Image (cartoon, rainbow, N blue to C red; front, side):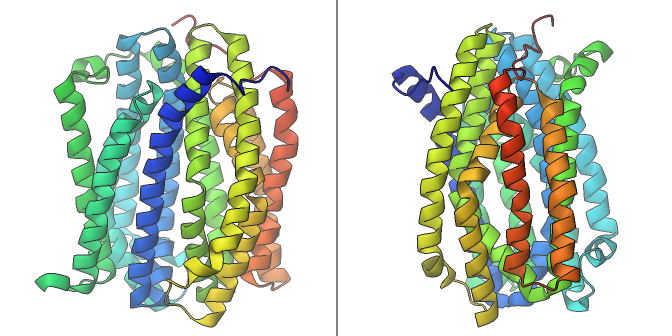
Length: 453
């Protein structure tokens, strides 16, 4: 792990220019999601569980979107390293077509068969009914989200991370304000409960998409491609992109299904268990924003260097990111453990939900350094270098061979409390780190995927 850029000012300047806006965007998003959860929590624990389980479908969808756009971003970052704008627009077009097709499938399922989806998680009739009302409305946001996602991801890959941050902030503030008006019926608006939360999200996502596209096309940005430029890709181009991108899409999809199976296991414990996990995850996401900022910054910087033909520089950058991420993870984990009792006081929940959420947060704090290490490893290093198959096998193996079996053993066989089940699941993160680190040292992850395109 020698040759680090710990004293290289240029490294930090570039890293901060990408990582800070992404971290800030994620911080706004996670903070306002927590406000949403607190607002819905005012309605009761059943409502928290209903929205939490309904959002599992959106969670699966958004991770597949993340897979498609992460796969495309590998090429966008490397094409930007050689300043190839025509191909950047083609990649963006492919991301829009792929994501748009997928969004229509998910939106149809959410609108036409919401009760069937929710019964996969719970048999609680009230939770299924409330969750179905939420899903029907939220389905209208899926295609809109796809468009925003593709442009935001492409913006970051060419080093323009501020625009998605500003637009996302406007959207999320809109969402929080509309939640306040529509969930409770403040200022003469109808009190719509969980349906109000769904409607607020649809409007806010529409605002986000309109702002993002308006600014990009008004500025005549690198990404401001005409429709014929965006769709100007042939079979060979699609094949080249998908050879690298499909393992990323599968990775996100299979990982998301694994997370969904965890939710099934929690729901088999109790509705209280689902509520406590939902609250703990909402809080943890605020502390994970730095990891996402660093991971994405790492992916863009390494991708740009590999595309420009600077292989050794990319390797050195990768080593530096690993060290910084692990140290930062340990500090953030300690902070989470310290402030958890204070944050939990904002939630209007029973003592048993409070205690379960507290112990889940303790486990999250203890394992934070490993989680951030793995985020940088998979999102930042392996993907930027086009080493997507190894990432796929690593995540698929750890989640499905370790995490999922332990979740069901803990919940259904050993009848453990939810925080012990969460602790068992966390073992898969440790395995991922142990198996992933030798791959970094081998340097086999570095591949220039745009060299002959």
